[in-house]
Amino acid sequence: MRSTKKMLILGCVLIALGVGLFAGAIGLNDWKIEGLDGEVYNMNKFEINEGFESVVINTDTADIAIMPSENGNCIVECRDLTKITHTAEVKNGVLEIRVVDERKWYEKLISFASPGIKVYLPDAEYKGLKIDEATGDVDIEGGLTFKDINIDLSTGDVKMDTTFADNVNIDVTTGDVWLKELFCNNKLCINVTTGDTELSNVKCLELESDGSTGEIEMNHVIAYNNMFLKRTTGDIDLKQCDADTLSIQSTTGSVHGTLLSEKIFDADATTGSVHVPNTKNGGVCKIRTTTGSIWFSYVND
Image 1 (cartoon, rainbow, N blue to C red):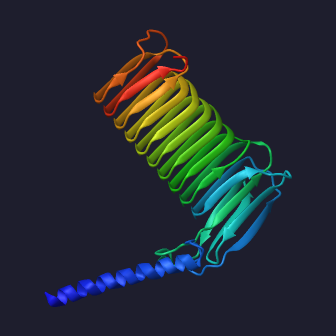
Image 2 (tube, rainbow, N blue to C red):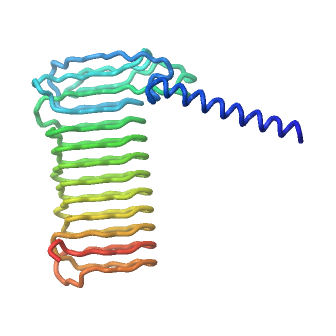
Image 3 (cartoon, one colour):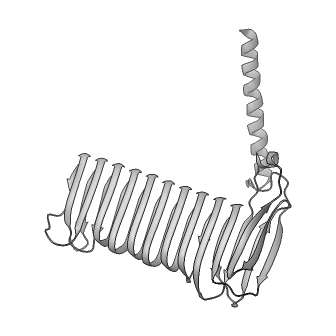
């Protein structure tokens, strides 16, 4: 017993020592995790002179930023490491940006590396944007137009501001999604396993958002046909939103909102109160929650 007790005490001391050394290292590094592994970053710049209609980005770990070019030239800037680099080239009308990871398997076990990719696109209408990566944030800025946008992300946040598209599909396992000033001519689809979703000033033909754990908040969002929202755990909040028909489901969480036009409400909460307008005009607004309250009104009320 004494021997076991001594080993437990020694283990606790070693853990505390490791935590202290780690905290000290972060403090000496201006409280940044990046750079603790001694990696040196290299800035690689690609000037794309060939024409292209679509953009494909396939990487493992990198923060991705896509923005309009100020001078009309297409530039790709990569914040690379010695053994993690990226290529950028045009193939068959597609700008392809891909990772080249030369690390051994054991070098990937513990890494604080934080590569980055910045893409400056000329003002044009592009057929597609496809992003597929494991870990990193995706930020799409100001005034770009795509026919189709597809983002598949394992861990990281997605931000999109003032973007025009026909179809948008976002699939995130763990992370938050922020969409602002998004104009989608057809369908907007957002799937988030764990994370919050926030939409502001968004217009689309159809909206579908499915999620397991996390809240969804929408401000001034209009789906001209159908709106489908589903959460397993998390509140759903709509402010000054509208659609021809709405279907909202929540297992654990409240559903609150204000709508711009009258609806025929079909609302039920297994455990929780229900307060909805008793109007008989407009499309159907079907709301179901197991545990949580339902409260809806109209903007002019």
